[in-house]
Length: 152
Image 1 (cartoon, rainbow, N blue to C red):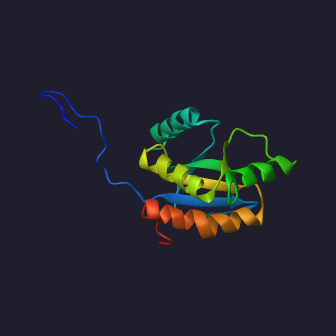
Image 2 (cartoon, rainbow, N blue to C red):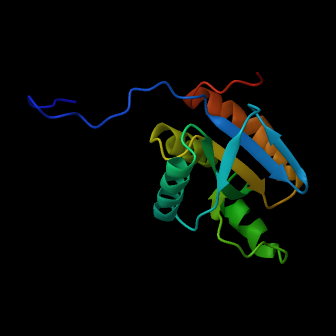
């Protein structure tokens, strides 16, 4: 980025923490990196960016993770079909991702790479099958996009 004399360039070169990934299932919560964080819920990406900016201004230095309701399957059509059959879905203001594990990994990686969030908390909507897909497909895929430490 180039800045004329007397002007400043607007970019952040500070070191970032590693991508943080969480899974919230029932009363259980798993995090790849322990530590303090703030969770944010939003209905869309624009609202998410505003929510994260507000949290960061009130809690500088704290990692901010987006809650994402997740319905994934081997293909997007199967994920949509399985989601349509559910009658007990939460009616809240949380981002919803319906698609494939690779697509979900891409969304999480993009949110992190664009400095929108420091990671995500995935909330499976389709039961244990979704947990297995996250563990067996989403996490390994994220590791191809970004360095995601398994533990600390």
